[in-house]
Image (cartoon, rainbow, N blue to C red; front, side):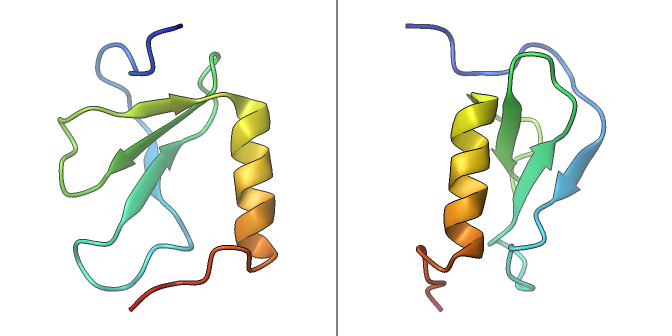
Length: 73
């Protein structure tokens, strides 16, 4: 199994457009990483990030857009 964390400091994080407006429910992603899509919790910008394979991330985003993961409030 490969390491699922991102190495070193990365710049260019953006908040997901599907994150809620409340502070504390924000997901950030980093575009253009050569090994996949890094994802982190915006409350902990110096904490760990998951590195999701690009194909898996594309499938996840498609499912979110299709409403397969309804938001919980």
